[in-house]
Image (cartoon, rainbow, N blue to C red; front, side):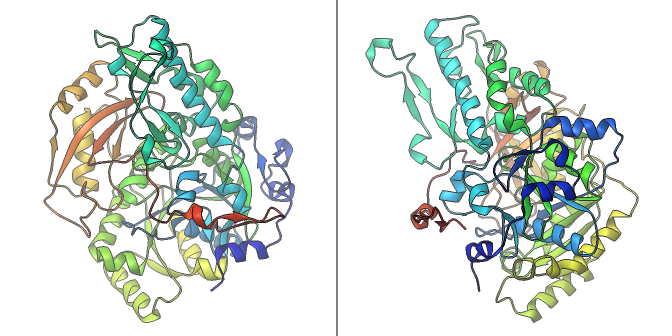
Length: 539
């Protein structure tokens, strides 16, 4: 079996202008070298003004994953190539990889085998600098907060009530909790507890991916809640006059990035928020642009249906007025052997709860026995859910044409998409609806003080926001070791916070790590570069 790296190096990339022309995007192209380009925000505005109709939106999600991943991005790229192969006009919109996982345990994050996005090494490393811009804007606000404390400006911020932590795009457990302002008799600032999170978990990242314009982004950033005054009044980034400079740092990052798949499908790779702490979707701008430039847009949401897909439906689609036409649920033999058929059925049910028709893609891995794959397909279909065996890694678009045909048929059904809950529903009812209907919990319990926090957020005017559940990705429950489809379990809400810029309330369940650590053998140990600049070990 050829490695992803070997396969990627066999392909001859087409100039990015040729790719842009196939999507009607050459007019405003801003090249970043031969094979990558930015598409300015004005392009979407121009297409909207011309009255260009949206294509069909297809979401790719998955069953509860194993630690190795189930190939969701490979399926996203592969399905796009299959749609092209059967003669459809198609665009793809996915997230940008984070350096942390690339250097840690997961490796690269732009597909695999013959269903990759190219150039893989650039996409997986610095790309167009979007994540670095998010890091800079986030940490600028941190610097302004500490200067505000040091200068004793108004409104006064309580040093022990600063909610805003620093970020970096790397896994470094040593920075999870730190003390700043040490030494120099106070000249180095106010001494206080602080820490780092990974850039993909930043509220700035989540806001960037939901903003529709520079002015929208600026207003969102002004709403970031950074801390409290001694009398428990909220202090925002707008109070510190931070939003203008932060937006200046993010101006270019707000524009989507255009690249290509191995079979020449135009791919917008833009934004990368985590799905277990944020909404886990690529930018709304990229998705809307894709819908205006292809008859079919294939996108994905992080992790499984109860995390990324739920947030895609109830946060991203609601914010952007999107109406998905179909969903593809990625299933693998190894995940099936870990979690069972009932887990697959629960994830299919979650998609149906939002009125979206679903089909299962049984993602074949090399070495999977055909008899086992066929038996799984039969078992799924006997339970009323259509399924196809796909081989996107080894066969590219040719490995999923049957799936593509059936997805097109699903897209022809009358749209019935609807969010799970209305925004005017109280926060606790939203939480309990997600926990009971999407996770299958028997009930919800609240850690000491969380109900009071929820009431305070509603008093502050945040009660009409959607909720963003922070939960482990390895289980339908808040226990990362609970496999399958558990029943009669209780979800524990341990904390809540508001993300004013992103426009949602985060509900924390279980222990969610916002700054991952490196494994015993990090992927970084196997990455190298030769004298010609060729990078190895990144995939």
